[in-house]
Image (cartoon, rainbow, N blue to C red):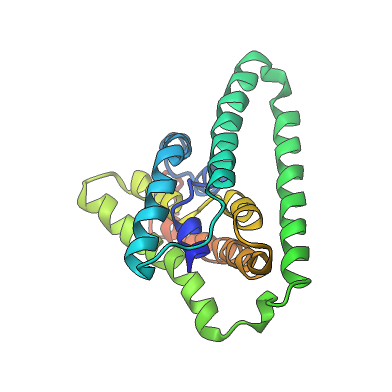
Length: 221
């Protein structure tokens, strides 16, 4: 449950902009939201964990808070450094992107190995566990779309908001799961961001396709 909270309160993932560009939603808004949520993570994520863990469990959960803050700081610094490098070396952007993708793939492989070799591999969980992990992604798509429309954003902007709100940075959440929990709980914790990532890959394309066919994006249906 704590790991799911970390996933749900993580900043938006970098590929949210790619999904928006794929269906021609408001890419600029998506990029702005990803950048803002990543920078705000330094304050918002620890506060969310401290607040909701206390409310839900009524007690402290064993976490390495120093390692958590170091992970958050590294993510924020990486975003700032990436922005500066892209501005300073614009021709090297494709190379920087490939390095980031390779690092992300290596992290997923490490997470899969850690989970698969643990005492609680992902395939041993109950159907209720899988439903609980998938629910925030599905609910986030629906309610963020409705909320954006209630705020009178245009349809392409609302689609971008919905994708951004449901596409979490599971790589960041996986890094936290692998580093801040006690060794005996790391395996079980790592399964949450791994499966949430699967949910994103399944649910967001379905939503994007429906939004495109409904005429909610800049691309003609």
